[in-house]
Image (cartoon, rainbow, N blue to C red):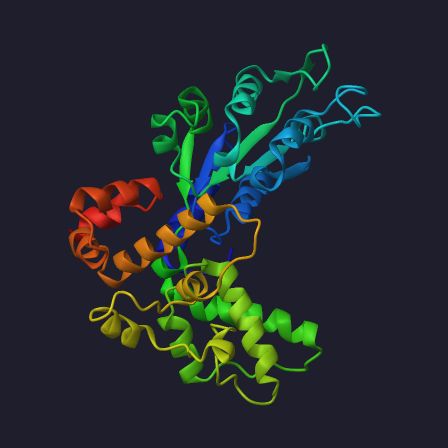
Length: 347
């Protein structure tokens, strides 16, 4: 995990302190902030470092298959189960299992996970034999699990068991001093992939563009932008002079602008999307089939993040920018898991 900012250093120190304590940990953070890297840090600094480190993205596996993937199944347990399957928990015995996108897990599976964390035992799907394992569970999400628990979509008892401690990874906009180091790291790696002999750096204008973008996609978005810009620049002997943040600009006729200019314009016209993510939501119609609720949730998160960022996390001003009441924006901040301490400190 690259960077020297106080925000990142505090999160890394927190992870290091928890590594040797053999308890479940919940890692919070927006998409692209490095939650998987945080889980790896916890594992490889722990006494379990020489044993297995396995990971499962709960949101990427169908609910009907996730139980089998985690706990395994016996032959004949369901149609197509022609042989016994050993699940991730058995394979991670003695090591660590990282559960990403935990908020997407069904209540039924949450109950089985709770039993495993409490007693270290479970049965394979279609099996009757109780299996004992010793696995440290590290979970991650960008969802607001307490709010989900209040709505009955997540088990409070499981949340209690998972949160021996909670580590929050800062968004990239909270650690702007790390952008130079991260951008150069990704550029050096991609230079090697391109077969270039040297990376000549970024021009001052390019660095200003990188530092002026709000990075709703965080480090993952930064990596893509750096690699795209390097590839399109094409001249290894000259510093990269143009940062291509929005690859759709040549088709839509829009060009990336400095964030200071975006903020000035947004004070007069809140209907005009300015960030790359907002342009995607506004200008591109996703093809069907689509998870409409997830798409709308992401769009709401992007507009909320933009309003808060452009108003220095002052919730009253952000509410005015979105034509919401103060209570409504506080509920949205809670819903999307945005750090309320930042908001309160600015109000």
